[in-house]
Amino acid sequence: MFGPFSIDTLFPAFPQIGAQFGADAVAMQQTLSVYLLAYAAMSLVHGPLSDALGRRRVILAGLAVFALASAGCALATTLPQLLAFRAVQGMSAGVGLIVGRAVIRDVLHGPAAQRLMSQVTMIFGIAPALAPVLGGWLLDWQRWPAIFWWLMGFALALWLAVWRALPETHPAAARRAVQPRALLHGYGRIARNPHFLRLALAAALLFGALFMYIASAPAFVLQILRLDTRSFGWFFLPMIGGMMLGAWLSGRAAGRIDGRRLGALGFACCGLAACWALVYHLRVATPAVPWAVLPVSLLACGIGLVFPVITLAILDLYPHQRGSASSLQAFVGLLVNVLIAGVLAPWLGDSGLHLALGSAGFVVAGAAMWVWQRQAGHRAVRTASQPAALEPTDL
Image 1 (spheres, one colour):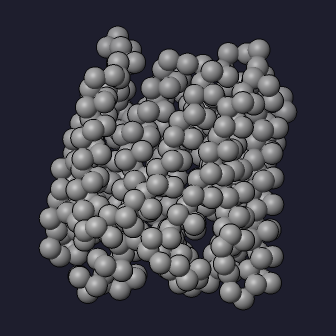
Image 2: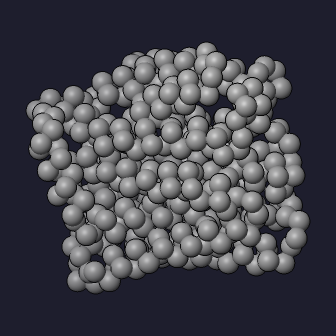
Image 3: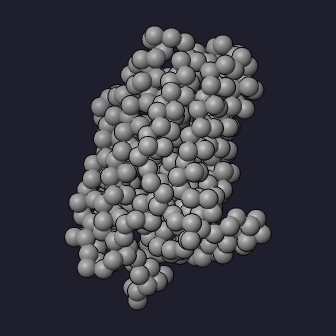
């Protein structure tokens, strides 16, 4: 959860930080882009490190570095200093998500793994809902450094919880030494797998439809919806409520509904949400809550349905390199997010209609990857009676 918290808690503070450092909205957007670039680069390392050193060690080290970087952000006196420590935050923030996926697949299989992955998606969904609200409350009490001091305390609390409660799920006998040449070769082999690429792009592009709104949250909430810094919950709570509902439904459907059908249902929800948003912003000159955020909530629900299915599908492609597969999936997704945060959000964030158009484009692209993968006829979601998430098929 500390990864999403480090993104969304900061949004309400953008005007205050920009005023202190003399930075405009585009410059402030780089605090997100730098974080995501570092996150993307290190996402290629966290998984293989956990394959070589064990899951627990890597998570503990990442949390410790994140806590130190948060303190550095709080003490920054210039924008370049803040950007540097944000990069260090991004380098360490991926351990929870990337290594956590591998932990789940280490101990569970089939419908049980999908159910737990859905529960994790629900838990991760809480963070973006609470983070901007918490950020607004902290700004009412203190200036923006308080946000980073809080992030440091949260990371230390998580470190203690992992130290006391998380066992090692990747035994020494199963570990693979980190060899840079072999690592690059392994990543190249995974990246050349068309089934991996289609699945990873389907997930990344579909989430990009939602991240278009997330990355534009300061403009969407403060300028388009004309709300104040304490009102980010009007946007994030319905969005995360939809994500959690979709993840819960995905978990309930595990072993009952074929994953291909569940994925199709999720993409259909996202398509309906994209059409709803376009129609709304075409017809309404002044967007307002709750109607402007309800399509985003439905979009998040569809993503919550699809993500556990696709994630397990990717991990099952490489059962002996789950850390590496998880890392490369995260890297693909983060590259899309960096493009959105650094280029598309500043470009399209001036109006609700432009955001809706950009989001719809990502839904269409993600759906195209999903349909292409299904038509390729080599990977499909297993039925409830079978132990793994995917298997070769003649579809």
